[in-house]
Length: 276
Ligand SMILES: N[C@@H](CCC(=O)N[C@@H](CSC=O)C(=O)NCC(=O)O)C(=O)O
Image (tube, rainbow, N blue to C red; front, top):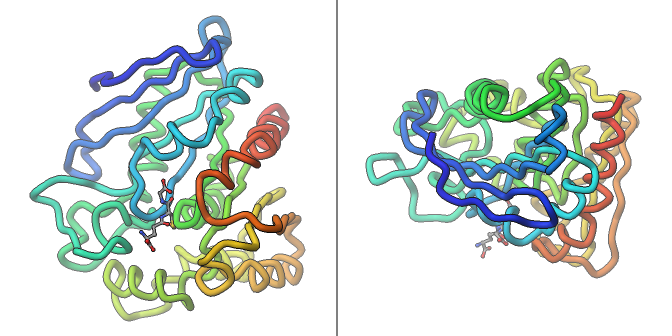
């Protein structure tokens, strides 16, 4: 592991690390915010999964989360969104390939060799964080758009790992929207039964549970409702008795300006759940 950046911010330390991932078989970067509290006490960890076209920098440099993570003593980890490199499969479009890993384990060529973001986040990265930072065993996860999908899928499938989950403008029904149909066909093949394990609404309908879910959705988001479909997800949660709060925010779009506006609420939501 190599530390490539280190900055003091609000009293905590914003770092970027690079390492070779055995799961992805390439070099990958993640950012790690270490609150000052971690110098003396173990702290909870919160993972943020970013959206299409992002790497570890977008959330780290644009959301302003560090002020609240320092205040509440939370380690925040933001990984890249896919394997990367000249020898790694890619696609010319922004919504497939590098920068668009969809937090799944691909089973189709040419993706299956490296595109294993589900395993990377839930196993390899988690182990690296545990071994290298002062953690207390409590873990939460949140994300944006494609990363909101990833956060919900990982939390719903691994309630023993993640005790808290929230999302900004997540893709909630990927199996029936154009971003998801394109990515799932390429990465997982044509059998739609195989898609269900990576579809938050299908996971809810299959009986997966989370204690409480918080979602923020901007009403001036150009991808709402077509790619995101929070109303369908809300209906599924209601049917299955899952405690989900979806806050529709007037005039906010899909950008990190929207995320920066409501990041305090999300960090506080996770701090509350991770202190239980
Ligand atoms: N380039 C595309 C849209 C790309 C885009 O909006 N990416 C979002 C996430 S969308 C869902 O996963 C993002 O976070 N961009 C990075 C940023 O820093 O804003 C297009 O033009 O349509």
